Image (cartoon, rainbow, N blue to C red):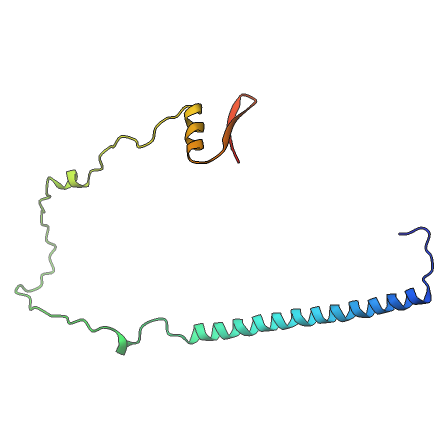
Length: 139
């Protein structure tokens, strides 16, 4: 606080009251705006929820594409016994699915080559050594 408080002049007192009235008006206007925005968000949320709940989640049955299914009569009567059948596997299947090892597509660079390649790419960079550890610093 101010130690040596000087009383305000009548003009200063009037101006202080005017500023107080302006501040109160501004606070009321801001509070009203906050309430309007909150109310609008609540109304939008209720409308969005209503639309989401009302909207059907699947295609109505009459709009679904019709797929023709052809039934073929079975020649054998169905049996309840379990049948075990051995299926011969193609011997070339493994070679088709095998992932071959390729040579790495990266190369090891020294410090000078790294800085030169960064400079060629248009990046300003440098190496900083702190406590025996080197770090790459760019701009």
